[in-house]
Image (cartoon, rainbow, N blue to C red; front, side, top):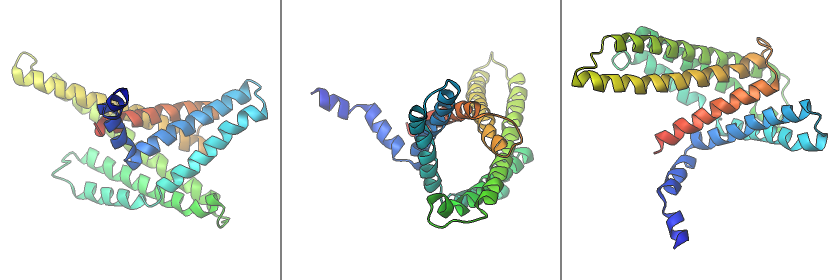
Length: 236
């Protein structure tokens, strides 16, 4: 009976929906990857032995490769999203948000295109001299996409503050609108934190900012956990 209670528990059904999505599996793998990156750095800084560091270093590399395989071909999805955002004047009338959405999607599309170009080299199937250069270009596009997303979230928070100032909380409609603003603000704040955390990865890889593996591992873990939380809510 206990087994039946566990098998038919709503949380189990929710979990199965979550892991059935590519995004859900990717966020879980990403969390493990970046935590491994942080912990390998931590062990190195605390005079850990090679035998202690090796498993986490290997986990970081292997999960990174697994995620590269999972995202292969997703550049087409982002190119389509960029085209839809550019044409979606009715859905997104605000030009700032529309252009930011187009920039974000094109940035991610460029990142995934160059990232996919390095796949065979990463797998060891066919070595390519231009792989490192392509990976740097991928990081540049990723950084550009993230910056567009940061602009969109900062602008969204600004507009929400303007909307909130006009709300009359003494009226019924005003109370409903106020609650809606709180929900939208929370979502925007979470996305902004996630984007700022993710920015540490390409900026450190390109040498623009001097973040070490420990800091990048921690921020990557945080943004991954935010992604897990958001995807879990979507599959509820």
